Image (cartoon, rainbow, N blue to C red; front, side, top):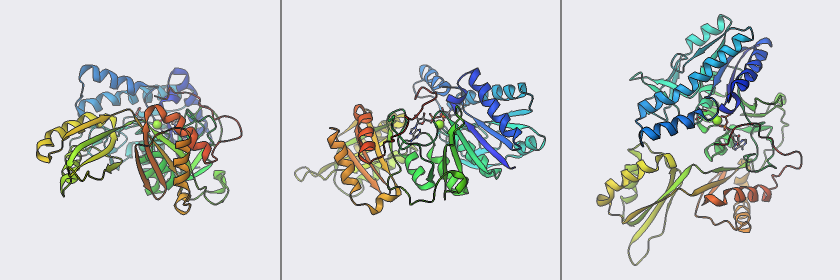
Length: 426
Ligand code: ADP
Ligand code: ASP
Ligand code: MG
């Protein structure tokens, strides 16, 4: 039997009971003859609590110290998990990201993994240990500073280790039974997906389905690591994410569904740059100011300029956490660019419909908009790709909109309701 990487999210190790329950699962995998590497997240909402604490001390905490603080969460859970496993009579050793060889660039708060050198993990495994690795963290190649990979980054740690250690599979244990056609916290009739392609999962993840982080799926696709997303609270088979479905993955070789699912995201804000002179170079200057501050944008829309004034508005969405930085950066360029004002709106939601089958189904966009209109939901921005349509709406409308679209595309399950085993949904 080969090597497996198992990742347990925060809700799976929320308290001492959770840690002991997870320890039993890990020991079972070891007893079944596997070499086991475990990646663990911080307990429950620890990371959010540490962020709240930092913000009380300083409204814009410095990247280096912020990362140092946040990695403490995973250190607590990794040590406790190793203790719980030892208590069951098995050998376990815990490692920080740095000790496990997770090497990153030096962009604090959202570092990228550039290399994984898991020599110490190999040695620990060869000596018969279960290796426990703190998720979401690494060490920067140049400055040797502690970094974090961005929220939800333990998923990426797990896949990166699975690739570096040539694991059979990367199991992502969470608080729902797999990847569903919509967030089970919002749509009780969401349906569990047996198998989903990397391509569709990537699109769902980048549209806000936080059950898997998009960087983790990107990594898994690049190194062709199959992911099995499942619950740490049940023994059920979950969702396989891979290039091709295999028989053992519980998926029949059927034609891919037209629609994989509906994703929503309330973590973004919208900035509108009002009264931009409609001439070459203006958009370039605006987005250069944003890019120079390492801010990632999502949707971008430019209005047709009013003939009488020759001025236009440019709107874009970005993570709320970057809102202040973006506004500050744009304010500094105001006189150079010559726009009139900035509007900031963080009461928005993005709703996306994802599916590789939609590129050959011309009616999908119309049905999507009809479902929203029937639900009385107003659309503020639209963006499309070959396998996704996204709209921005008011945040208040998000649940209703997701449910309406899910029903309209025939995704509602007629069997039991989707179970959410734990977590606060924070
Ligand atoms: P963990 O702490 O295990 O990393 P997360 O909270 O990051 O867990 O991810 C699991 C959560 O993702 C679920 O509780 C669910 O609310 C949410 N989620 C969003 N979209 C989906 C989806 N399409 N399928 C399953 N879960 C989803
Ligand atoms: N603890 C980190 C977070 O809450 C990383 C993770 O859970 O994946 O974002
Ligand atoms: Mg997660």
